[in-house]
Amino acid sequence: MNNSLRNEYLKVMGVQQWVAREALDADGAAGAIDSVGTVDGVASLDWPELEKRVSGCTLCGLQESRTRTVFGVGNRDADWLVIGEAPGADEDRQGEPFVGRAGQLLTEMLFAAGLQRDAVYICNILKCRPPGNRNPSMEEVSLCQAYLQRQIELIAPRLILAVGGVAANSLLDMDEKVGQLRGKVHDYGTQKIPVVVTYHPAYLLRSPLEKRKVWKDLQFAQSVCANGQAGYKIT
Ligand code: SF4
Image (cartoon, rainbow, N blue to C red; front, side, top):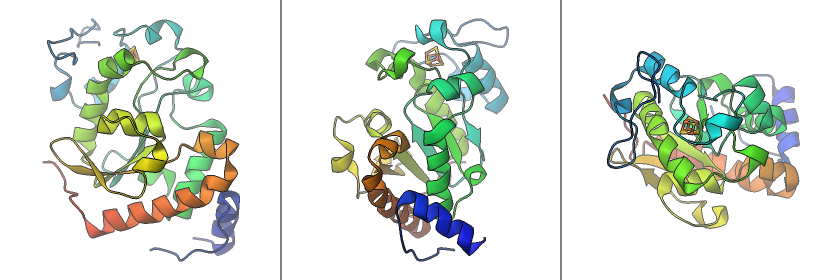
């Protein structure tokens, strides 16, 4: 990796010095919702089936305003799973999470931490854009959660990086500010996958002085992942 290029990325992040570290069914019909509010049959879908189900999903009202669903992108065998809130306007147009300025900053943050964007898997809590970039409703999160849960099962990451309060609180079933969730290892689901929380890059665009905190969070996430704290692959 070219050092001057790496330093450029760090500069963008505001870090001066660092130490390198190495619901459709098969016929296209909407899936039913079971008694606990999850989508029928999603837990047994493979990647192509899951992607197809999401692309035709009409479970919540966001299907009316979306341009396209935004499933997720990256390495499906990744150690790191990065989870954000919901697609924005650029993502809705392109069908890929974290594009546009916030997405570029996320890519720079990952790169500075020694991770190529395509080495991790990136997705959102919601697969469709809320109009006007409003926060997702609890109902939307609940209806969409089976898709994310299946993605997590299929990837079996060693670490989840939750970016932003909505992603963190939805994953952890909490109601806290990002500042209170940072700096500790949470866990997700029965698999106890380690979760590290940091700020959303869209927030960093508005508050660039907070980039240093994100850099600290990424270093923390690296150490959690490297030390294998509660991280294991689901078979
Ligand atoms: S946000 Fe999720 S539940 Fe709602 S329509 Fe999109 S994919 Fe379906």
